[in-house]
Amino acid sequence: MDEETVDIPITVVGLDGEVIALDDRTRALVQSVLPAAMNHLRIGEVIATGGVGSVRVAFDKSLQRRMALKTLQPGSYEYYLLVHAFIREAQVSGQLDHPNIAPIYELGRDPDGGIFFTMKLIEGRSLYSLIAGRPPRTPDQLQRRLDAFVKVCDGVAFAHSRGVLHCDIKTANVMVGAYGQVFVMDWGNALLLPPRAGAEDVWTHENLPPLRPEEADNIVWGTPEYMSPEQAQGRRKSLDERSDVFLLGGLLFELLTGRPLYQDPDPKRVLKMAQRGEVTPPDVVVGAAITFPPELVRICMKALALKPADRYPRVDDLIEDIKALLRGGGSFAVTSVAAGELVIREGEVGEAAYIVRAGTLQVFKKGGQGKVVLRELGPGDVFGETAIFAASPRTASVVALTDSELVVVTSKTIERELDAMQPWLAAFVRTLATRFGGVGSPENLA
Image (cartoon, helix red, strand yellow):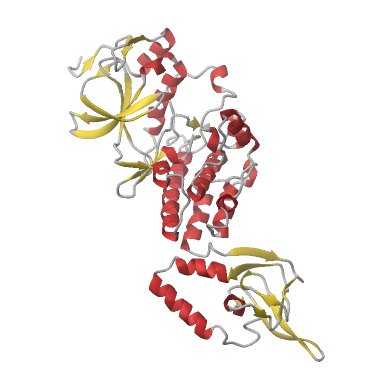
């Protein structure tokens, strides 16, 4: 036997010297995966602790590397499910090689019989700690939160491509490094999807004894404050990628509002709220003091749809919409108009301008012999822009000739976009708007 390995104890020695004997089933589980204990690590101070496990700093004498070492609390060894989940977490996350998932280095046992796994030591803070229960107050804050959100989505999308659902996505399970690195942590509640044809070689697997039906079926796993309705109802077999999409929607909700989806002092009431899946839109939660881009609210609420069929089918689709928002245009609402519908009426006072995104419209004025057609509008054309600078009567009418989509631009959304600019550029644009806001012909300024 190698000098760095020792025989496995049949007991676990806790930090305070207490000795816990493993029952036959737990001992068989551990011995099937970890037949020998290791003695090449120097274990340091505790950096995080919880009811089930703790994380310590460790130094690998073989590789001369600092790392994080996660262990079970001594009392956790009395529960087979906790030991099973701990080993499974290491095996599952160890197969997910992605920049936004913390790498696992080793799964082993220490000389006292305790199970551990080592992973990248992340010097940073949790996303929960960073947002500190507060919504974003500036465009820069919102931008940083959305940048981190995209990285979380990237990690989760990769896991899905390997057949793994996280099932416990929340701000406390996301770590942000000192240099902007973002890591999705804590895969202990992960669910493995059935292998798909053509992906067997990359599909994540485990070699643990399966749980008994009463231990795996119709049991709620995760954090109720963030759960999808199907997860909160214990329908574990019905979960798929869209359940994680809901959790990502909950994460986005918290990044916008500073609070989780469901809040109540009574955990049972929280679970009931999650089972119903009733979500208040984030802009309603924060009130008038903070304004979010309408497109961002739409994205969040689509991810949080009650029915899985109404959510984004894949995380990649959610990422695409967020990235499109970050490229610009997310501050502006989009409205649909049917063929024959009047968009603006001559003589009425208006306060919005419109950009044609799809369809054909017609600009016309009243004339002595009836209506006088001024021009037709198509994708990319703008009309009604004088209303942005001052509420004034419309100089012409606009009607949809075909079913159309219009981007709605108001002075409020323009101001929000200007606030996000460099101050000197925003001042320059405001000056131009003031000087030239009244210039133009009726057919352009309807």
